[in-house]
Length: 107
Length: 126
Image (cartoon, rainbow over all chains, first blue to last red; front, side, top):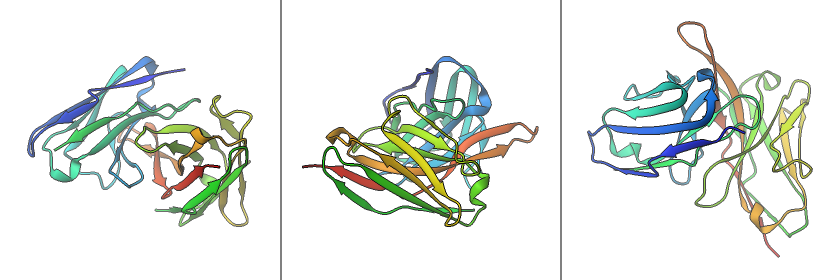
C-alpha cells in the first residue's frame, strides 16, 4: 500500500503570501494519478488539481501543482482569505486510493 | 456538470447495518465510477472503495472488506453503500464521489474525483 505523507500539518500565513504544501509518497506514483483537494469547514472537498499539475476548470490560476515520482507539491501563489482550508493529496489509481492526512492552511 | 444527492442523517445502533443512497443527475450515470469516502469528525478523508455503475463491479479497501457492499440501480441512477456490523468507530460523514478523467494539453489522461455528494452523517450509538 502506498502511503502519502503531507507536510507541514499546519501552515499559518498572511494574505498575499505564497504557500507551498508537500505530499510525499512511500513508493513512486504515476503523476496522472495524483490529485489535490480543498476542504473548507462544513463542506465536501473540492477537486483542485489532477494529474499532479492539471488545474481543473474553474480553479483560480493562483493554484498550481507539480512534482513527480514520490514528491509532489501544491502551491498557492498569492493567498486570499478564502483559501483557508484543509488540503489533501490523493492517489487515484489501483486500490487502495489513499489520501494524505491533510495540511491545514490558516490565513 | 453533474450532481450527487445523499440523505442527510442516519442513526443506527451498534451491530446494525446502514445503506446510504447516492442519486446521480445531470450526467450519464453508467459512464463514471462512483467512489465512497468517509470522514470522522475532525479527522481526515478515508477512501472506502469504488464501483463501476456500468457493470456493477466493485473494489473495496481491505479495511472494509467483509462489511461493505456497493451496488447500484441503473433504472434510478442511484448508487448504494451498505456497511454492516456497525460500531461506534463508524460514526462519520459518508460521501459518494464521482471519478473523472481530465485530459491535459498533451492528451494525457489524468484522474480525480470531481463531483461530491453533500455527505450523509451516520451516527452509531446505543
